[in-house]
Image (tube, rainbow, N blue to C red; front, top):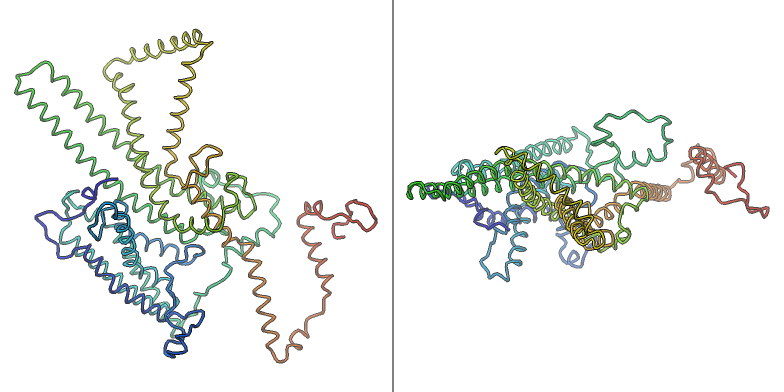
Length: 577
């Protein structure tokens, strides 16, 4: 892991800032606790306790404040994504283990990192709690002023010392502008939320913030399943067939949107830090090159050192070019992984809704409930960590292969040795055939070569897919050893159990009918409620629904039970019998 000094964003010796961001983080816990306490006072507890009987002023207050539902949140998804983006700088501090609020021995650093992560979570807790609370006016006012305070402190810190000691000119602007954009978005969102809540309070608008058991897109999905599919499918564009096709009956939960937004911002910060670290390394190589040249001049042009100096210059130029090229390649790869993971999430969820599990390993098709709950708790953090470390591994491996290709093919061709390279390849193929003949009976060399080739392919594929948590890099039968993939499987099963549209529609119908029956029983003249409706036989209604279902789904006729009244097992001709 990179040292904390390389990640340190402290100011240089010529600049003194009046705001210490680490100290601000500590003191931000005071207003954070105050906001949490106020929102908890407004929340009502579902069950009363003995203390409510002793203290009548409580009246069931001081409920639990939930910042974000990680399972089934579909409202304010992009707002939560920007709220996660505002925490990106502190997340990178935690990722680098550069934030240690206490100085402790090496063996206790894991506990201190846990304390530091809890402190960062409590500091940014009001962002999510104010967005999630049902008391819109109070939440919008508290959230606006808390966000505005963080925005002003960050601006002051940047304006007073825009340059840094490690990264040079405009260091803090480069690092903090994504978080500033997220804070501005949150300010606008809280302002709009206050205006809308005030209009509802003044009865100038109708409230649409209702907690629905069944979301609109989920109901549309079930309706599409019950609807007869069109005989002729609409023609799709190339983008829809090869890249992505938007589905109006599917929405990503807030957890996936927030994780993707935070992953992209953290990846940007990671790439910038890596670029500046390489810049420092490149400057050290240039200093070494200058020392070699000075040594040559001191020895009056010795014939031993000039070739070494030329090779060092060539190595620096090759490394710099390959590193910059592979930076773009690895960045595009990881960015595409973020969107590809979202597409795989939708594909996997639809397969699970349809009852298909064959795309999963056999041992992963029935995860336990504890595994699913633990998986959804750690998915977001693991996904970001996998993406960042995956980028670093992919970049380093791509750079090594790029340098090997440059020295094996490109540089010899530039130096006029292309024909010799081609001859060497031809001689190598003739030698291969000769060895293949003479070692036909033993086949040791070819077996060793095949083994090394297999190992090389495994390394390449594992490196290329290390950032993808939705695909295992283990061989078949050993998928259980991939804890990242197990986290993905447990997460999608947890979402499948809690957000299955068909199951939610069934439960919604049961709850609606139960509520309607309770309402009819509580009415004094309930026997006169349905006098205008015609009486319909339950059996006739059931047979009609059966006929309609079989008419739209003829294949279900073959799956019906046979007629056994006459002692035969023949399938009836009439599908409604």
